[in-house]
Structure formats: structure tokens, C-alpha cells
Length: 451
Image (cartoon, rainbow, N blue to C red; front, top):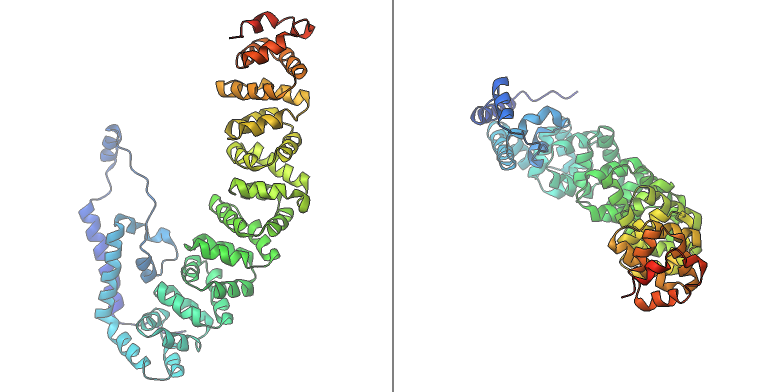
């Protein structure tokens, strides 16, 4: 076990930190008394709820593991936190940095294996500060001679940019071990921090060696470079990628998975869909661009089971994702859209999708391709002016005999109102068959709709 450095600088560091926070607390004021809180509530004041901000540099200096222990820092603005981090670093350098500076200078001249022997006897925080002051090449040379467990501890204290530069130069095996150690300790932010700066090749190599989708998704959640995460994911094997997608849970997870899916070629998208749980596939699809979903559905005959895609559509319908469905419905062919509509067999759902569709001509052609009972259920759902305008377009696509059948089976008031949206020539053609007993009840009122 390494002895902790007993320098006065450590004492001064924490004394300084506490004095700054306490001074700020005094200046900002103490928590309100119960009487004050009651008065504020009576006055209508509502305390604002804000997300706690941590300056990345300050978080690194303090080696924050449990953020809840540092909630008092929320009293400082982001700029004040940044200034505090700078002041702490300067104070440490003033009080205890002599040894660090000397070691950094010496490390430039002595062989790496000797520097490594010295480093191995020091605390990780001290080694981190020394490595921040030497060249990247020297830090890599020293790092190669240290145990991964020790390097993992150093990474917690080291400048994130320097960590990235150093681990990029380490052997893949060492970096894999360091990543596993940090992951086991829950240091996801540290791993994500240096992963953001790694080359795609290095990141892919480490991901393959770790071979653990759970590790990858946890790191990805903290990475800021989303493009790099996507490129890494699509470079992995189908089994690995499937494991990655099966661990999705939050909205951000599904957005990431959709970004990955969009970059896959159509054949691979189909392979993934066929192997994914239907609920997850539907969730991912809800974040796809409409054109992507349409392309996949149109390729059903090339690999994706029709029933599977219909089930995904049904799940989206149950979730009320009508705009999503309308988006890809606009991109489908009339034939495919008709097949989908028949498969879901939901007139109420179809009218809701139709309301969001931009291509009204397409939904009209789809509607007339449905059985009479289905079409009647669809028309029975109309309520708004836009609905009636759409239903009128549908009606005009039907032959006269079918129009009469639909009008006679509809609720009388709804049939008359629908007819009022028909062109006069269409109504005239319908009324020419006024001897049709199906029109006996509504024919007189239909005449009044002719303009």
C-alpha cells in the first residue's frame, strides 16, 4: 500500500476549498427560515428547479465519484466553478507542486523505465499531475511500464485531454484492461471522456476486445461525440450490435439506436429488424426518418416477414405514434399502404393516420381498396371539415353504385353533410338513380346539396 503524501499542500487545498465555498455561502445568504419560506410562498414565489452543473475540470480535480456529495457546488455559477478549479490548481502548484515540477523535469531526461519505478511508488493523483506536465510521448512510454490498475486510478485524476492522448498510444490490451477496471468501478464518465477523443479504429478495437454490449451502451450514454459512437457501433458484428440494441431503455438510447440504424445498409437493417424484439424494433422505428421506414417496408419481400412489419405498425398505432406512421405512409406505395391498412384492420386508427398524411390522393386510393365494411368504418369516423373533404375525395374515386351503398349505410346526418362536399355533377349522377330504394330516405336532402 502506497503511503499518502503528508504535505501541507493537501491540507491547504481542502482548507482553501472549504473557505471559498463558505465565503460564497455567506455572501449568497443562508437557507430561508420557515417563516421566510412561508412568506415567500404566500407572495407567490416558486423556487426554480435546475439541474446541478459540475465544471468538468473541477470534477476531475476533486475526482468526483458520487455527485450527491458535492451538491453544495451548485451554489456556484459555471464560471465561478471554472475559476475555483483554476485557483485550486494554482494553489496546489504553489504549496505542493515543487516535487511535481522537479519530477516532471527529471522525467524528461531519465529513461522511461526509471520514471515508471518512481511513479509506481507515488499516489495516482501525483502521477497524474506529473504526466500532465510531460510530453505525450514520454507519458505513453511511462504508462506502458505501469500496471493497468494503477493507470486506471491515474486516469481519474488526469486532465481528460491528456488521458485521451496517452491511452491512444497504449497497446489495445492495456486500454481494454483499463476500460474494464474503470467500468467495474462505475467510472463511466472517465471512460466516455477519453473515448470521445480516441480514433474510430482504436475505439472499435477496444470495443471488440471488451465484447460486452452492456459496457458499450453505458459508455455511449456519456459520450458527447455521437457520430463516433455511431461509426463504432456499425463497425461491430451483427451479434454484438444486436446485444447493444437489446439493452436500450431511455429515449436517448432509442435516438442513438435510430442514428445507428440509419447508417446501416438496407440488408443489414432488415437482418437487425428480423432479430430484434418487436417492441424495441417499433420504438427504434418511431425515431427513424419516414423514408427509412418506407424503404424497409417496401423491401419486405426481400427478407423481412410481412407479419413482423405489420406487428411493428400495430405497436406504433397502439402507442399513438400517428405522425410517425403518417410520415412513412406518405412514402409507401399505394399497394403497400393498402396491405398495411388491411393488416391493422383499424378504421379509427386509419383515419387518425390519414389526418397527418400529406398525400391525400394516396390515402384516398388506399381507402377505396379496402372492403366495404372497413371503408364504412373509416367514413364513420369523420368529424372535422378536413375529414369531410378527405372523405369526399374518397367518394369521388368510387363508382356510382358504391357511392350510393356508402351513403345509404352511413348515418343520415353524416351522409348529407358528406354529400355537401361533393361536386354538383357527382351528386347529379347519384340522384339520377333516385329510383334506387337505397336512396329513398336521403334523396330529397341530397337535392338540397346541389349548388
